[in-house]
Image (cartoon, rainbow, N blue to C red):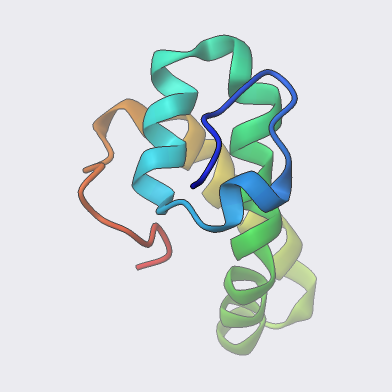
Length: 88
């Protein structure tokens, strides 16, 4: 049985959770944001960086990743929590 989110959420607790659940919790419980949303970054930033690097070259890829997650954070309240994977 998976434990519920607590202030000391760890990557192991979130790894099994769909991205929509993690994003929803980061919205409904803002105090958990510093531990939850960065886990999504760790989980997805490499694939987004590789995608950007293939299309734009390695130079701008890092900025693209940062901008992608900044926008994702700003608009996380609009995310469809029914979607399991935030990457697409």
